[in-house]
Image 1 (cartoon, rainbow, N blue to C red):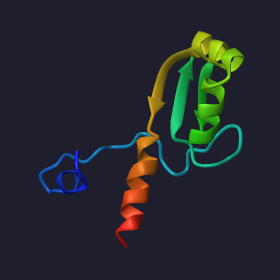
Image 2: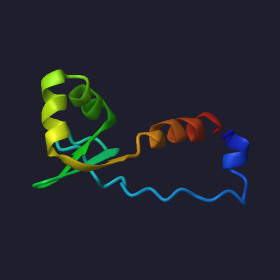
Image 3: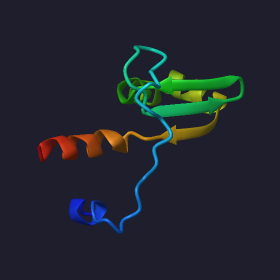
Length: 86
């Protein structure tokens, strides 16, 4: 969807579940991914989620743990687009 169509008043606004106060459990940066697991939830910044998912051992452990993933890394792209028009 183009930026013009996304910003049209009739376009539905995306409601993000993760907010600026949600922080990565690893580094404290803003969390864009929440992994809901069998024993609780984990929050990750985009960098640390990618790092885990690209490591074969960590990936296997994460797949065994996760029940649901809320991935809002597209906010990073949206925020960059907003900033580039100021």
